Image (cartoon, rainbow, N blue to C red):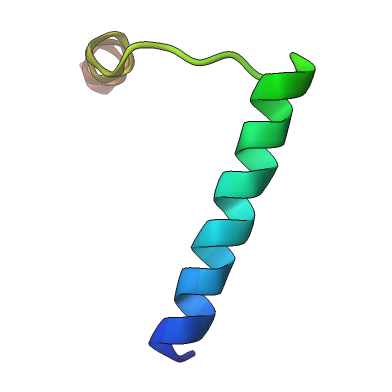
Length: 43
């Protein structure tokens, strides 16, 4: 897969996620909260 194809996939994903945030089907969380929760799950 070329770098241009990968960049397009990331852009498509960003657009999809932005749409989910706009529609309310997804929520955003502060990065420090996400990292803390991930670390807690690893224990």
